[in-house]
Amino acid sequence: MSDAPRALFVNSDRIGDCVMFSGVIREIDRQLPGARITVACGPSAAALFRAAPGVERVVPLPKKKAGGHWLDLLKAVGTTRWDMVVDIRGSGLAYLLRARERRIYNRRWEKGRPKVEMVSEMMRAAGTLAPEIFPDAAARRAASAILGENLSPVLAFAPISTDPARSWPAERWGRLIERLAREPAFDGWRFMAVGGPGDQPAAAPALAAAGPRGIDAVGKGDILASAAAIQRAALFVGNDSGLMHVAAAAGTPTLGLFGPSEWWHKAPWGPKSRFVASSQTRGEFQPIEALTVDRVLAAVLSLHAEFIGGGSTTKP
Image (cartoon, rainbow, N blue to C red):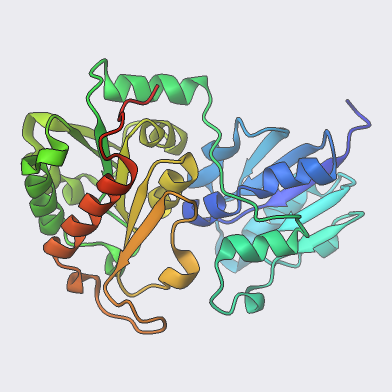
């Protein structure tokens, strides 16, 4: 409909932030019913929004030197008269566009509060805008191809982060999976490694420890395919990373591993999300290597006891 309201949502260039701010999509529709939404975000996250409700266009926005990506976006969206512009990056672009209303994120507001809460306030939402993923049929088919017809429960794990300081050592992932595979609670389970292209070395020790019970989903499909596969897992364990936030948004019981990063600000969001940090004192940082295998194992077993217990582990 040509007379439908138009909204531009300038999201992050990072997968994790894009997921944490994904609740903005439905809030735009609540405030502008029937809105036709354009999303601009980093190329690695673009697939997350291709099937989001109300989204008619996704503009991948790779970073360029001297802010050249903003000129690219201005060329792509500058001729439209927008009813609302939501700018998570806090750029000056929104002021260069013809817009009836602007919502612009300011990092100075954060002061250690969860990002989900801050963006909810920015949008003047009635409640907290819970993160969400929007898998389509193609993503679900890709997930089915990865998981196969075996209906055994799956623990998904993401052993890599974009920041090496936030990546628990690969050999510890191997030891963790080796010990989990021997635990009675995980008898008959499979262990699925997820990650992007180039993440195979980080996953190799854990997949070797899993043996025939391992599923190698690293680099297979785009981020939405990974999201659909994680959504079908019974549990998820991962470093502080985009895939950790994907798992939490998918509703899969999630354990995030935190080293020298702000768990009080970036912890996975949702009622089934938990985390374990190298330092449990807010504002104090310790290397992620301070997280022992024993401590992470105990946290995974606790996650299992809380959300699986003796219940069903099968997902459609």
